Image (cartoon, rainbow over all chains, first blue to last red; front, side):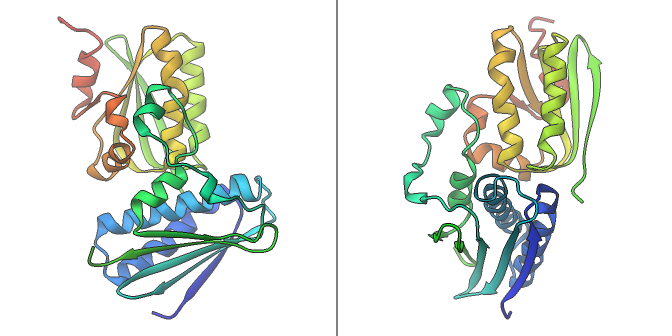
Length: 139
Length: 117
C-alpha cells in the first residue's frame, strides 16, 4: 500500500471519516476486526485531542491522517498545525486512583498507548505537530 | 455522519437509557444532556442498555464518569448492561468494571436496584 492521506476539517462530526479511512486501510493490511476497531479508536482519540486542544474547536483548521504499510504493520501519521503539547508531561493515569476519585477526561492519550504498539510525537507548535502510531500484524 | 440515538423508558422504578450507534466526541453531548435531565428530574436509579451501541471512545466514557458521583451521592447508581465484546473491551481496558456494575442482561441490572425482590 502506498501512502494514502485524508484531510479532514477540525470538527467532531468528521471523526467518523477518519475512523472509516483508517479502518479500510487496516482491513486491507490484513488486521482482524477487533484490531481494526482498536486502530480506529486510537485515531479517533488522536483527532479528538487535536480538535479540542490543539485547535480549540476552530472548525476552519485541518487535520491530515496518512496511512502506509510498514514493517509488517500499519503506520498512521496524524498531523496538525495547532498548539502542540509536550506529551512527555502527560503521566499515564493510575486507573484505580483515577476511578476512585471519579475523575474524567484525559484518557485519550492513555487509550492510544494501550491500543497501539508504538506511539511517537514530533511537536513543532504552531507549525506541524505529528503523532505517529504503529500497529504490527503479528503481535 | 456518525449516528447516535437514545431511547428512554421506565422499568420497575428504574430509568432505562437504550443507546444506539456511535458514541464519540461528536455524539457524547447528547448523552450528557440525557443525564443532566435525569438528574434534574431526580431520577437516580439508571440502567444504560448498550445492546445497540456499536462504538464508544473516551469522550463517551467521560460522560459516565462525569455523572456517577452525583448519582451515587443521591443513593442511586448507573449500571450498564448488554454490552458487545467490542464495547466491553474499551470499558475493561480502562478498568471501568471496577467502578460500574455491568450485567449481561438489562433485567439483571434492574433487579440489582431491588435486592430481595
